[in-house]
Image 1 (cartoon, rainbow, N blue to C red):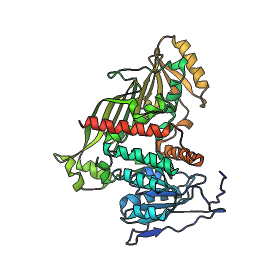
Image 2 (image 1 turned 60 degrees about the horizontal axis):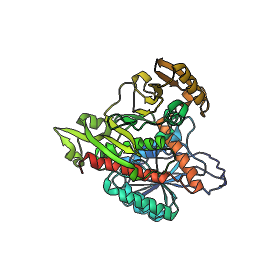
Image 3 (image 1 turned 30 degrees about the horizontal axis):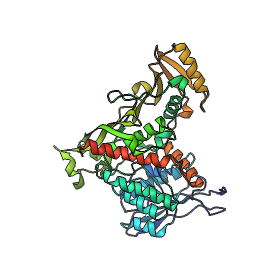
Image 4 (image 1 turned 60 degrees about the vertical axis):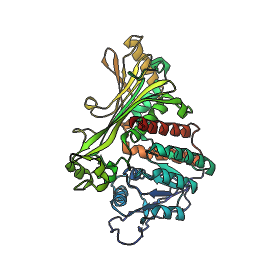
Length: 465
């Protein structure tokens, strides 16, 4: 594919204008190109989640700066536009996106009728996402969807059909798996494939799984330097999805990606042993602090008990995949501890050592890789083998520190500390490479199908269905 040369003069999204009564508002275009023939044109649909904006936190070769946004009028789309405007006007490395906005209730039909681009970006209310995916694919559009693609077991057959239709139409359907780009996770994966250090992955048991992934998230957080205001529907599991089918999508993906790299998986490889769900209880004051609403809306009253909102945002599943026992768990708290944020804990248990990622106060809430429970050799010999293995990896200046007689820690330079927000640009760039090639790796689609079979089956199990 030939590279298109772009000269960026200046572009700013004007989002300060009121939503008014007009159906369509177009920003002033202040960008000129030497050649206005881009391979990719983005179509952002109902961007109710801040992840939609993070896709545009950076710019990409071959992607048009003109982005068509289709959404119902309201605060969700305005907050999205405000975030894009902040990227366009930041002092360091500003973007130059030109948002072309259509606001009305028929936004999705308008998007399909205009077909002003070829890549639909979905990150918002998940209740209609399976329909948006299916209809976009059937219209011959590529789709980059934030997780989760589906939140209900009833939608699983629709997702299978969407992937089949994508193959038939010659378009790509992909979900945004940011955690694959976190450096300590990459190191954990690479070291687990080094037999001299890790040995082989143990099978584990239901009581002591070979793989554990535990994630802690928070409703109140800072995004792009500002306090995050969440839409009220985010707290409705019928619209956002329960925790066991939401954030666990990342964790199930990592189990597959690390333990069975580039292997073609199938739902028949998965057996759910147990699953459970429990609520996070939120007061009216907390709800107002993160949404701006004085009271719980009518659609949330079904989840209000004793004056507080019960959000089933927490879940855990224990399952086998290709004979390996895995545990995946997600917890949502309202607010992180001082100096902290979302955290990730991960264990891969090997025959020679355990590879453990911790992200607590001792790590100053930075993900840190430990090598624990070293087995079968002296620490001196093992440390030498570990350093040799690290020297073969595409990372320099990784230092090994002894913590105790059976534990080592990998100290990583700051340059490898890529933020969660930056991962969205990395995922998008990788997907754009797939678009250029015209195909996904042959293991990706079976992996996504297996992943969503796992999460939706766990929800059924947790609810006793």
